[in-house]
Amino acid sequence: MRFTSTVTHRHGGFRLRGMTTLLRVYRARIRPGKEEQAMEFARQTARRRAASRPGLVSIHVGRRLGDDGREELIAVTIWQDLQALQSAVGADWEEPYFVPGLTDILEDATVDHFEAMSDIEEALAPTGAGRR
Image (cartoon, rainbow, N blue to C red; front, side, top):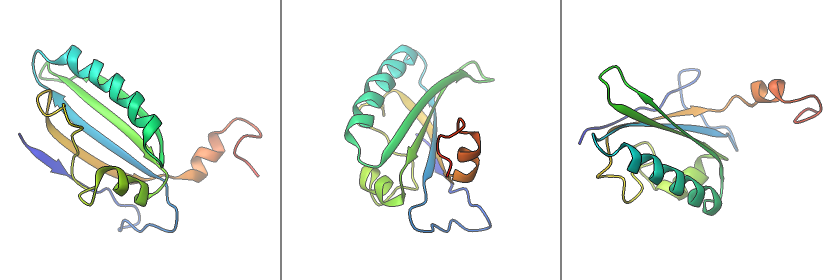
């Protein structure tokens, strides 16, 4: 199984200023014949994790058919800050993390981290919501 990781930087460095919200983008290929199992596992795990992880703001899970005909899974998690992410996945937060039970279902995982640009989120919020 191949694992790769990158930390995507803004302004040339991943500088966390105080309580910076983080986006964690996790991608993996689904092993052939495990597609339905992967989707059901993702649904159930996302529900449990969203309810039980302090600092986890939201989870968004999707899938697509890759150019090679194999399904790919993506999970975008939004974290309140780096401390919350580290508490959930450990000191190796820059590495792909497999929830127990997924190692037989997924392969070729990658993870990227992005600093959330809250000024854009506020601009897109409905009038009166999230604005001062």
